[in-house]
Amino acid sequence: MRIKLVLTLLALAVAMVAATANAFPFIPSWNEAADANAPPLRGGGGGIYGTGSQHDWGIKCSHCHIDSMGMIDLQIDVFPAWGNVGGDPAYVPGERYTFTMNLIGEHRGMMTGNPPDNRNGVNVTIEDANGDRAGHYFTDSGVDSVNCQPAYPDPDPPRMTTYTYYDCHAVVACGTPQNILTSWTFDWEAPAAGTGDVTIYWGAVDGDTNDLSSLDDDVKEGVIQLREGS
Image (tube, rainbow, N blue to C red):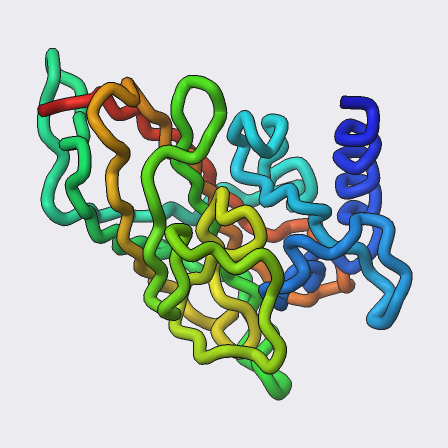
């Protein structure tokens, strides 16, 4: 636990001082060491994705991307639609759902430079009451949590909008040059019957590279509680 806590604090400290608006523009960055000092001289996420989930120790995007203007939103559409249990949204065990997430109100990105200085992104994780991943993710990049890749492959595989790897506890937006995207999609296969209620944790960031910091990057975060249906 002490080691995990140290890594958590390192991840936050590095993110606050080391070009965090541009800190995780690459997919491998999420699982690079928090205290990495190799070029480009910035630490990674240390396996913490900032979803706010139990697995991520409650750490959120807004813990580093501060002074948000609060102008964005993330529209999350799911097909098929959630069921209903006691007036609450519910999943059907074993059902496969398609998530489409659209960033609303983008205003921070500057379409300058090559590539443009946009740094948009999302992260999503779905956990059970114990903080374990619930079900499986299938990203539009062709990678999934059923056959989870323990390390980011080299050479870089084809990418679309979303990706998962390492322990596959979350889905993240694909990095450069996909940073300019404002829409992302992936599939989620709900867990087996008996799993119980689950929680979707999500975050979205509308960022740029102004001042090489995370100040003023706009953030939106939230949770969705799902009951187990039938």
